[in-house]
Image (tube, rainbow, N blue to C red):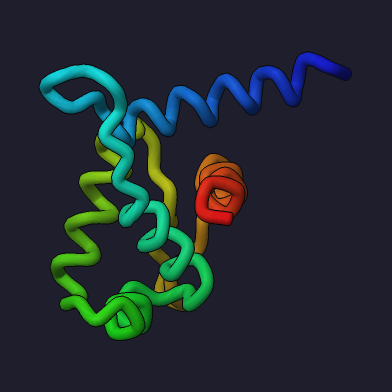
Length: 102
């Protein structure tokens, strides 16, 4: 029963490190912008609407999300004909992002 939260926490630390690699001179270069992007995409369920709300172009947001997914090693959002929705791991990442940005 106690192993699940520990495992989830370990996954979140791994994801955070994957998304925020250390800069050249040591330490972590924390850029929370991509987490804000992910939260907005999840909130609107649309990359186009999220891009508009974030004052950026849709192709740039799509590219940022795709690069974020590639750096994490898993798909955060599932694209469907009805819009976009987070995967199971994506939902966990969204919850982590909310805590990170709170």
